Amino acid sequence: MVLSTVFVVGYVIALIVVAARARTAREYEDFSVARRALPLSLIFGSLCATYVGPAFSIGFVGRGYRSGLLFLLIGLAYSLQNILVGWLVAPRLRELKDCCTLGDVFGQKYGPQCQVLAGIISVLVCTLFSAVMISAGGVVLNDIFGLPRWLSVTVVAIVTTSYTAFGGLRASVITDAYHFALFALLLPGILLYELLFHLDGGLTAFYQHAVAATTHGFETTPLLEIVGFVTAFFLGETLIPPYANLALASRTTVVSRNGFVLAGLFSALWFTVMIALGIVAQPFVPAGTGEDYVLLTLVKATMPHAAYALLLVSLVSVVLSSLDSLLNAGAVVFTQDILRRFTARQDSAALIAGRYSTVAIAAVAAGMAAFVPSVIEGLLICYKIWAPAILPALILGLWLRRPRPLAGILSMIVGTVVPILLQLEMIFPTDVGAVLPALVCSLAAYAVGHGLQGLFRGGSNP
Amino acid sequence: MKFGLLTLVIVAATVVILSGVWVAVALIRAAWRVDQPASSPTPATPNESAE
Image (cartoon, rainbow over all chains, first blue to last red; front, side, top):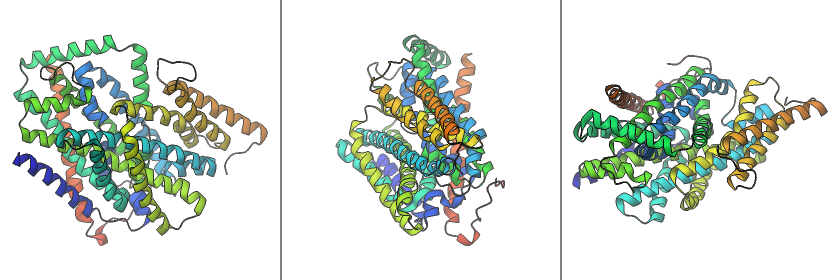
């Protein structure tokens, strides 16, 4: 018990020291893009720390327990997406001048209306993602300390907001590196410990568990559902605001490209470790255990109490490192794409607005955390909105020589409305999830807008 | 096949741990540099290779 307390207290003290060393952002460019001076190692660490949230850790262990290697194969779609973004999109984003957010990119390509629209969608997505993260953090604290749910959620929100609001992107990236180092050492460490000391039946048993679970996974998951998952993993998180901000804050285009490519390769290895933990858990975790509790149950059943405290530290790291990036990105987007559009704020005023926005988004997300159904389901809802609403207009805008504003606006509106209607089952039912049909509608809307504006005005954004 | 699966898992876990060490070293360097603004690098031009 004493050792557990030492671990937790040591973690908190180290976090305070690291956050303090990251210093307070004194200028808006510091707060929003860390002066565009971030090196490869920090971009890589922050990207990985941001996408490795509860879904890619606790959630994947649960999926490995239930369906073996099936979700490793599905997860590879996410790895591929990161590599493609690194190769094709991230350097193009970094090349653009004076862009702090994706909204700025939309503003340059399609005009101010599109910037505001992209800003509204981005803030919505960041807030939803933050709510999922705060909810997951609340579950962890509730499980370990037995705190009431509302108090756990409040603690997670306040701790993260405190350093993100003052330090901005740089503090977020520095603390992400700290959290990444912690969980990248501890969670694979748990796996190696289990393989060395608790693999009853040895190599054969591990293989048999993997085959049995994978077979069960394929038998119980319809093909169309697998296609829906692959699509969601391939497109859902593509260039969400925290990732886009890191692409824009990289020191160079080369750093921007390599950061995403390495993060994609890392994700494949990470998924392998998490799925393997789920397979190793099979003999120790009772059949009725909820997916989100497989990892906690495994460690409780097989490791000393101090290791359980270390797991807690890892999971808190996983949550905070995703949450701080989302809060910072949401605040920067709200300030840059919405407030500054209407009030022409000076940099000093924008910095203050950014800090208040961080607090406001955290407060709203904490309030919404009670309504998040489960970690993965919550993220999938966010995925469904983001990809169709933003990606077609963004990618085509970066590649077309003269993108037209009407095309961007129509694509974003249709891409936001259609997945919501599909989710509410107000239009045709679909088994492949909302992303693909919504994406098709969004692309069609883009083509219509592009054609119409060319037909009647021949205009493009200057 | 059995051996290959376990080898893959162990290699993946090892590379993840090494990535953690790499980023930890970068974190220490970055945190140290915070106190030395005069020696911190000037932001490079976008197309310049940094690492």
